[in-house]
Image (cartoon, rainbow, N blue to C red; front, side):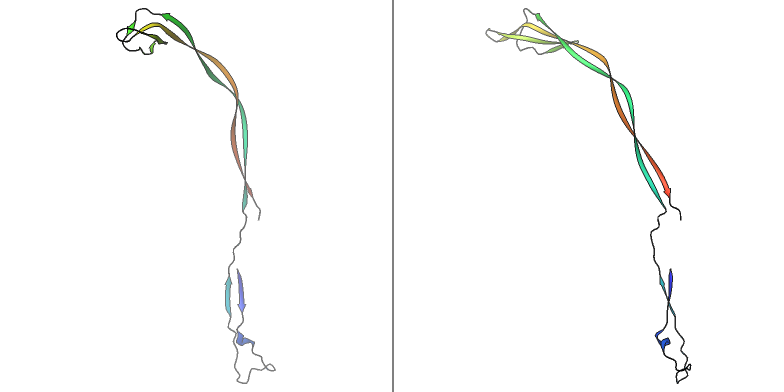
Length: 146
């Protein structure tokens, strides 16, 4: 904060030989104060942020599932239907009827054989080596001295 004093213009009258002017008047200076306010940024400290990445080796168990089918043809006799039979399930076996048309006055369906699909499931344990990343943040405060 600064203070500035400005003298009045009337104060600047000349005096002759150390005497006052002819009217014998005294000049009293008038003073005016002016206030000037400034602001400035002052650094009070700094922060450093850094990030570390840690790697961790881990073994994980992954079950691998393999499905396969055994195909077996089974002969069938004397099974005649008015509509084609649909695929059916008997436990873990899928039965797919194989048909042929038989000529009669009307068409009917005779099952000549069936295909049985047996589902076999095996689970094989499998170990996989994977790398997992984990971040860690470190904050450090640095102060400046005044």
